Length: 73
Image 1 (cartoon, rainbow, N blue to C red):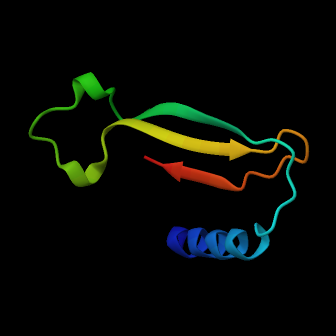
Image 2 (image 1 turned 90 degrees about the vertical axis):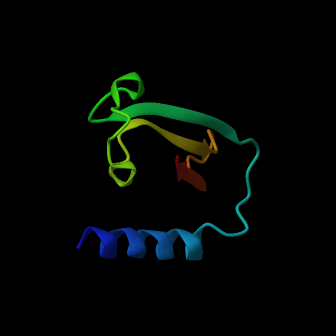
């Protein structure tokens, strides 16, 4: 279910976020953590769980407000 919503959002953005007229673009990152902070992740923790630091990198046009780019890292 969540995967379907994500795929639909990705398709929508891919079709609508083309040839944008922008004056300026601001980029930023948002820091968060998954379950525990990075320094507290055990060395034997399953890496597929994605525990620890999580960054969301974004870009936005501050005038017209579209967010044409984002990436989870």
